[in-house]
Image (tube, rainbow, N blue to C red; front, side):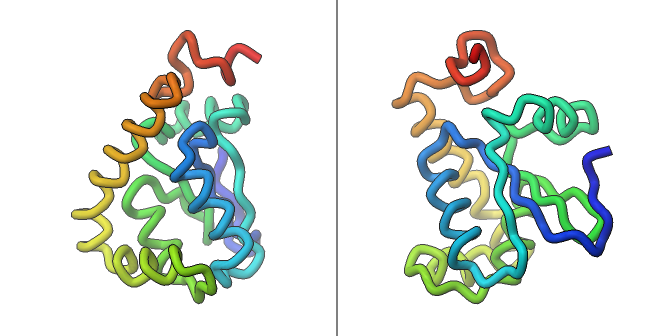
Length: 139
């Protein structure tokens, strides 16, 4: 089981192939103010990605947060992050309030997924890291 005990620090699992996702994750880890937050690149961490997928959490459909003994996916994951941020980075100061409520995160998240799809397409990477032809997957 990928879920973590409630006492452990939160983990954000993101798609490292997406430059937007990577930038958000790195800023979140360094400057969000969420105590103990760590980030994991789900595109390159094959075992973690397979464990998440086996439990029904598809990284190609959104980021995952492992926190407080639960697994949060997509809009719920980003809403959890943004509602707990005390950001110092300008991007996080903009996104935090925008995505901090469940309803706004749910409505906005599809736009973030579209931006991710476009960015991955421009980089020649498949949306699904488990798709054949992903250069990170074949390493």
